[in-house]
Image 1 (tube, rainbow, N blue to C red):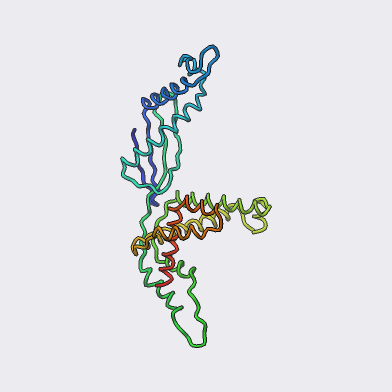
Image 2: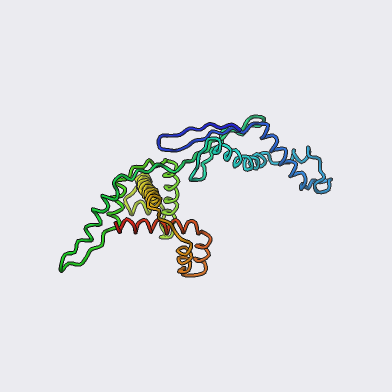
Length: 275
């Protein structure tokens, strides 16, 4: 299988992958053979009908779809190994050609972890947290705002977020927003009218939030790596033990890796607040 790699300035990686017709034909033949073994055709015992007859009755679109499902993961895996890339998200696939008797082509878009430059974040965050450490007689100590810390951190952070990640997060936020609107018993038009928004302004707002959230996520990840902030198994187990019911406990138990990431992120935020 052949593949070509293209990297955009924002870090988006596009792989153009070609599956040779010889492999396509071999896979299609193997699938027909499997179907033949289980096929029930009038006049023949189950699995005993001639392959030629079975092939004529097979849904060609379904056969191509099944072949693609079998070939895509293999082709994509070979491509990322060939070009020595480490994707951090599932690829977005766009099939270009599935013509009979010809090579099949598709593109896969993904990205790697973006480069994060934290700048003098410690020095500047300390200026924010220092305010809460000044004790004035007769005045109650005011804790530093986490929003202030995050704003200062992002102000010092340089990072180019691949558009493909932002698009994915916007889709998630949009689905979440639409679900919330539905729970309120409103239509999208009613919601937009009540908030004086348009579809375009709502999408722009979500895109901005997505970019900020992703920048923060990678910045915290970088800090955690530099400061060697880790999560022990006991911390995960203790958190699971605080679940409100069995359903939540099972969900947490089944997502220990995600839970560890959340705990690590919180520990990193605590590190920033204590600078």
